[in-house]
Image (cartoon, rainbow over all chains, first blue to last red; front, top):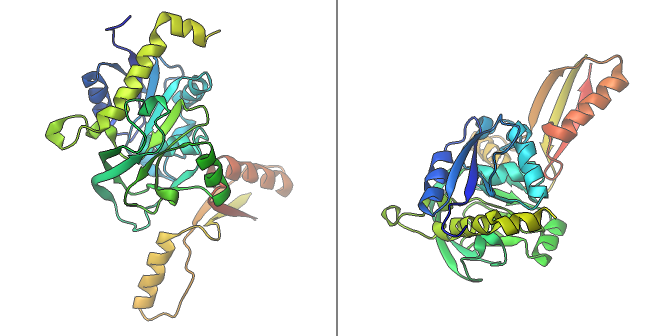
Length: 237
Length: 78
């Protein structure tokens, strides 16, 4: 199977706007991006799922709060429970948090300003599939563009996540008031990760940085390994 | 039955909206402190009695209207 393109779904909710960028980046990095409309109750045969950035359902009520009830999200939750790879970017992280697939919740930025610029991130844990192309302590330059990126967890939850090494990326300089400078978290199993910065906007040197490709390549390579027939058989045992 | 749900940021949670409102009020000359901005949801609930209506709205709050990590809620029925 080596050389074949792993299939990775990219969900589109009403109000998603980075779905095409995510599909483009995945294609560029050797995957086959499969668009999935949020009303679909079943996922196609894929080895990974990306929840892209945007403003699903206009961010009404709380960001991600309504999108989590989309039919496709039920399928994503089942996929994640079976160990499937799920990456949430920006609004995708907000949805995963509201859905309870990732810990914490996203709040309006401390400054109340919409932030759109490159930030420097530190890789805290390289043990997830998404950071397997990075080394611990590595600095990545990836853009953010969000109004509600202030990740929150209370002291007890944050301590638990730190102990279990579920904080994956931290801001070198905190742009939004996020607790513990957290920019990315994963679930306990490590197969679901979400981050506020946009790796899909940092895959082409024309746009300044290609560090985002490291995160997405981690996903693509893990998806490739998971779509190998022997791996699929092992996962279903 | 009509229900009103008041959703508030929990104490200790940073509320930048509240801070912005407070600073604007101060600029207007009002002596205020501790401004917090929450949300009001008005609903028409179909229920046989008040107890049933309250239980129904309670479930709505837990599932959607409030996020227990950061928000508290109050239910008023009339």
